[in-house]
Every structure is written in C-alpha cells, then in structure tokens.
Length: 105
Image (cartoon, rainbow, N blue to C red):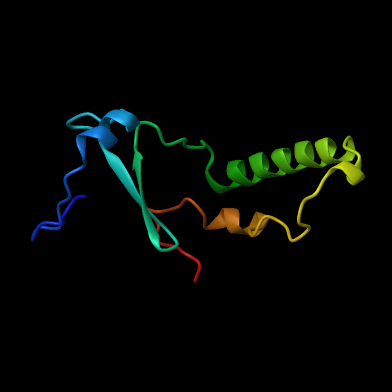
C-alpha cells in the first residue's frame, strides 16, 4: 500500500512498476475511472492520430465489425443482455480526453 505525501507524491510499489514496465524517469498518466484511479504508462497509452474524428471513425468501424459478427451467430446460442454497452458513440467526444478537462457528469 502506498501513502500520499504532504506534497501529494505517491510511491509506486516495485512489483506494480515491474508488471507495467515503468522505469525511473518514465511518464505516467492518471485517469479517473468512476470511484477508482487508473495509472497508465504514457509510453503504453494508445493515442489515435487525428483527434476526435479519427476516434469516431474507429468506433464506427468496430461497430460495423461487431454487427457483422453478430449476424453470423445463431441468436438461440447467445445468452447476452440486450441492455447495450453502457456508452454511446457520442461519448467518444469526451472520453479519453484527460488534458482538456471536459468530463461528462
């Protein structure tokens, strides 16, 4: 377990750093995920060149692939909830944009 110092610094446990491939001097990103805090090695973060439009395009491609896969499966064999993913295409405009500060409430 780590503690936060008076300067708001945190020591990353060695086992965690080794598992994530984080070395001294590496940059890390902090991301709020609901009630949790995610630590992401900056070198490992996948950045999509082209900004929001590129992310939306990738989302649309993935949606088409998923629909194609779903059309090839016998619905009687699949036991999934029809409630959806919990997020929409519009969420891509604000998701993963930690530096802009634009978060949905």
